Length: 242
Image 1 (spheres, rainbow, N blue to C red):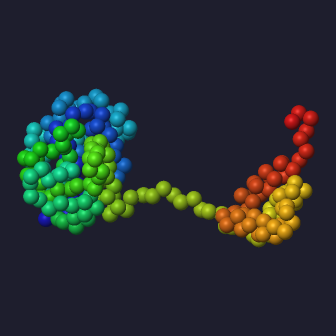
Image 2 (image 1 turned 60 degrees about the horizontal axis):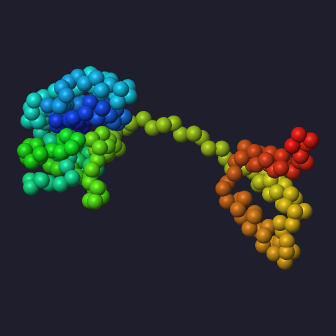
Image 3 (image 1 turned 180 degrees about the vertical axis):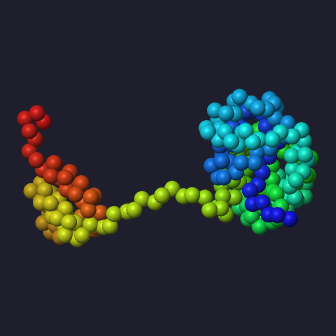
């Protein structure tokens, strides 16, 4: 059996076109495109889904509609029912992370099944699954938006994929010590005539504390130059218009 690491996302009796669109958006964010809809309440296609998809039109265009869950997952040897509770059905219970690992290692097509917005999956839906996926959640408010539930599972799945990462911005090296020393001396020269280092018995400790603060962040040369520009501006005498 050929391994297909890309799971199908199956929405059972989804109610709002907006939620189908948001689900498509969440899927495409993490490289998933196989969307299957079981008896959507308002039929399909749904004009409300497009704007909510925010550009994930290819997922909506490829979406397939089925009258029953059994038909939607007929080609899937691995079916995972997402639910906050077992609903009286004895099945292995996995976290999204554990399910993602299984999807990547088991041969054949997998499906992650999500229930309707208000009621979730019923007992017969869960009975079709091989395992249950449950997200650890606040028991006092165990309610996830449909697209939120999808994005949690899609994200865990994506961690096993080589998805593109935003390019890292190269950090500038720390400023040379002489530049940092110049900034500290400039600040001390501005503070001294204003009595900042008074009383004199505490001047050494105060200067040391100030130096410690200013040497902690590992300023780069642009940051040092910027701050020195600020200090120079503050040291000027106000002009007539100021």
